[in-house]
Image (cartoon, helix red, strand yellow):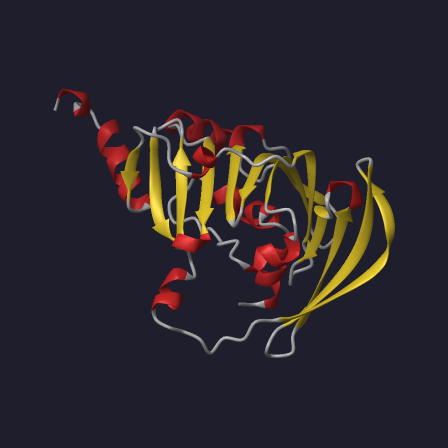
Length: 256
């Protein structure tokens, strides 16, 4: 695991989604597994729902992307729900957004089940979903055990109020087995059982990803949120789903 990849995990997976948000509706999108490492930073907060607000700044400090999505966590399971057409400052042109909506792929739900090494990419507009192995599943099955976990150092650096919540601010330094270091800032809300209400991660190219959780509800979300909806068609890959979609769009498909 690279240092930057691990920092994305620290950022409660929301930052990871932000980095790949524009590819969520596309074939071959790279989806990351939040993994069990996430639990180390959540502490008591392994069951909650919230609205995630994500902004991405380039190395020049320009705010280039903004997005919001619904977030839910239950134990190690993570669900995100996003409407691509509501993204602000999106890099995707309007015509591409319109095409996604026409195809029924503008709304996406992503569910990660680390204990089963499975992820679901769900398209409500198509009443379909893909069931795929998580990125680390193949390595785990092959018994790859030589990779070392990064060294993690956390230092309290002050107190701030974020979105009305009193927080303790932490600096995290992650060092991989090659000695490469990367930094993240975490804000734990003391009135929300130390929930990581805001995170900031800087990637290797200087991009700053800020994630803020709002409207936090610390009741357990319904377990039904973390399984594909009944009646939705299952596909084994995005390629399989897209091939079926294209065949159905061909002239005369409805008369077969």
